[in-house]
Length: 283
Image 1 (cartoon, rainbow, N blue to C red):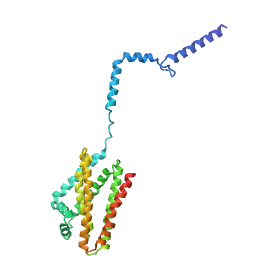
Image 2 (spheres, rainbow, N blue to C red):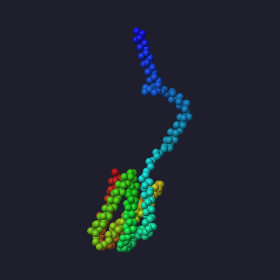
Image 3 (cartoon, rainbow, N blue to C red):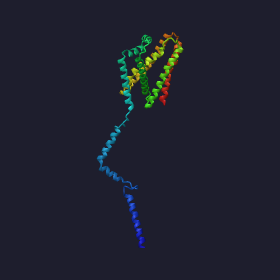
Image 4 (cartoon, one colour):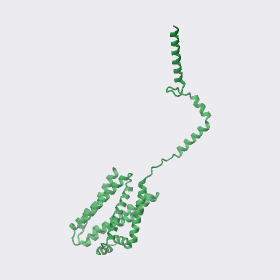
């Protein structure tokens, strides 16, 4: 009987000690909540600390910290690429001072364009300069559309670059082939020469404005973007009018025939570009 009573007493003491430890030890999972009077007491004890925290929260709400942006290597590469293209243009200007002068004269003067067209200049350095300026034009125009469409990804830029390169090469091939179909074979392909001359001139002029667009602060960058828009629209309209008169003068064709040719092989390209980039912007 005493043995049973002792075992029962030991079991009761063990159960009570476990219950007590679970109820009052903070390491247990069943800890009871601390009474509100304790928080109230701590608030009065640490009033200075509480005021400091309140002031910190208030300053954070008034002047929230902006998250640090991730470093963008594309901007660094773009800056050096634009500076490199500018140095190439300056190098061409130093090695061949008359090259850019002839380009700018040919863009606005019909007489100068026809005179240079008959000279048959085929020096190797002129061909290299032409190829370099064609690449600069494609690269610069791609950067303009990249900014205009507000594309965020680098892959989006290369997609724009591929579209412009493809359309540019297709236009050159089509004009080279079909100009002889529409007009006499003995005449020079003045349409293709005009397009290449205007594009090379535009590529050179776009470089400083692209530097302002990508690296200048508002409102300078926005103003430079608007200047490029106006410049490209005026250039295209002026080139269409000049091409019409030059083609008509060289080939002695009627009004309807020349307009039909320009609509098929130049104006249609601009609508294709607009349609392609509208679809790209929606995607």
